[in-house]
Length: 376
Image 1 (cartoon, rainbow, N blue to C red):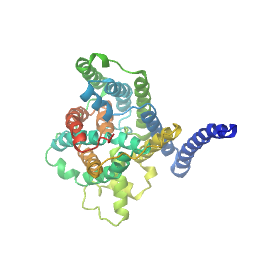
Image 2: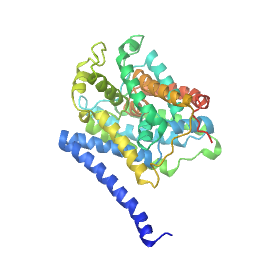
Image 3: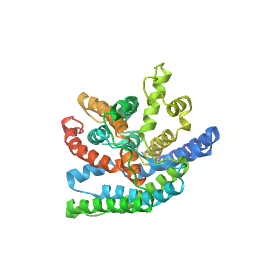
Image 4: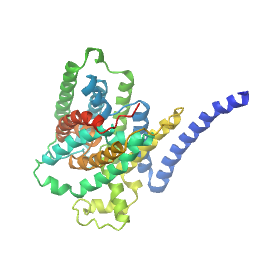
């Protein structure tokens, strides 16, 4: 028989758990600030914000593309375009006024970049997560993403190791838009894509939910804050590759054969704490933020391991590796290339979007073939 004491204990448990989660997050930010500096503590807080918004408001990148492909529902993709537009309005003038202090997410357009974006688009639909999505899903306890994440890191490390060989196959110089003219062109381009999506959308899906509008605004604010504090746009892929590179270096691997990992900037980061790497900090924050939200929800971390065949788990590992490898060749993922690339004026972001969306069309078809749909 349930007693009054039992009811009181059940009601109190979430309060204590939630209080513990909040205190843990605050302690992590404070500890980082005390250990390595206030800027790094603030960046961890920005990462926590990303994770909380992405998980708490169910804002993603891979899922909305899937919704558009399968159901002609552009709501999530519209929200992405809105957030990019909001960042552009602030980022373009900031970059113009602070040359040398702030930098955009730039990348050359070439064979490897386009092929990498296409493969990334397909792989992210296989595991239902891009760079940030894999971090969020892993933080909230998704088993497939927990399996894919370490292979993502290994793939990012390997892709960076071979990057120069791939770019030597042929690439254009870095092409960028800048100033108010660049911002205007960017906004016109985003508006044109939004209009095309409206035309292609199913009539019943021509709406942008308020939840996604709020998420788009919050993500834009966090992305601008990331640019100001770190001096660079929000990114994901480099940090994951650095984790694997540090592990390889600690295991005795010689990285001098890679032009990327033997470059002075990379060598410096390999010898310093991960807490001083901007991208690593926001990645850690995203995982912790998603964990915080999942733990806050009643039963949020009580996810059952999906009943999937061995073939599906193997596919998750391979797809995770391909996500990391291809995103290095493509100079970013949905965040670093699409979101930050376009919002800071890099033309490779537009080409990345087209190639990755084409890849997603095939990735959506691959997922059931690889047995990654959970058994009923």
